[in-house]
Length: 84
Image (cartoon, rainbow, N blue to C red; front, side, top):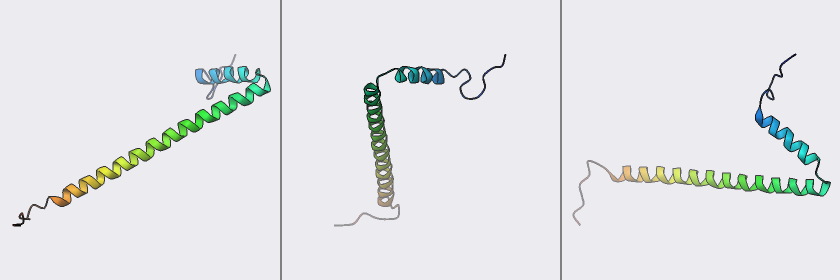
């Protein structure tokens, strides 16, 4: 008796995926299409959230870098306050 090898050997995720495929193939065609559309919409929503999060993080990093360089530029140890 040989043991299964590779990615599917003892992988519970692969077993779950196989179960989902079997259940999906048992659906009528119209339900398969509806399910695929829902899955695609879920994936688009997740992708949009990821992009928004990445852009927000990038803007925050840029703002922090600008804030640090602005603060460092204002602290000139050899300068004297102006007499105005």
